[in-house]
Image 1 (tube, rainbow, N blue to C red):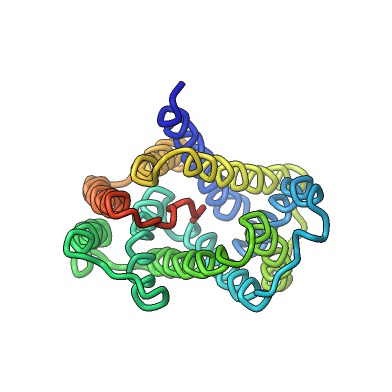
Image 2: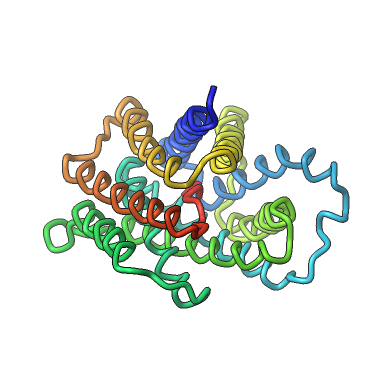
Length: 295
């Protein structure tokens, strides 16, 4: 089996895992009454448990860094992004939230101009323009009300894009495992603090759902990471569209929610634009940050 086929299968499995996690978040918060902040804490708690064996193999040397303030700042940004994302899923469907979040690569490209000094040619601007047009089709400002959930998804996506810019900076100093270790370890206390104020002890069944969120989130992230490791971003990124397909299908069976035609058209235009951006980066030899964020 070629690396391209392996990458596509890994990305498809990652998309399914992420979509499953997002629907469980909506179920546990809307149907079971667990607050989004508490659910976000448990996502980090169980995610850390899964990754502990990986971290333990490298010992304390894993945490050796001269960029501690950057790691703390990135963890704080990620924590706020996660709280926004989990909260958003209490307001809007998984399909709509996923479609809006596909705009992430555009945010990363624009932020890279200001913080990394990267330049963007006319063709990449074309891709950005296409993606923004798609976002407008999904959100439809002036035609439908832009609710709290939409703003929370946009906020989460923008914050995660900032996190990726910081990760790119950190990659020049620390190993990928160190970067992941710091954000995973630090996010647990950062999400626990807001969770304290809304805490309710989950039942055993609810705890199993919360554990599933952590398992699906961490598994999806690892699968996407491996897909990007063996294939170009321009090949893997379009498979991210399957998050919308999986999310919409699961959401339909669980909540009778399904994105309207404008959401599908807009999401398709976004993916077309971001894929064109990735293709231009590959041609130019520019290493673009992968769109593997769980939000």
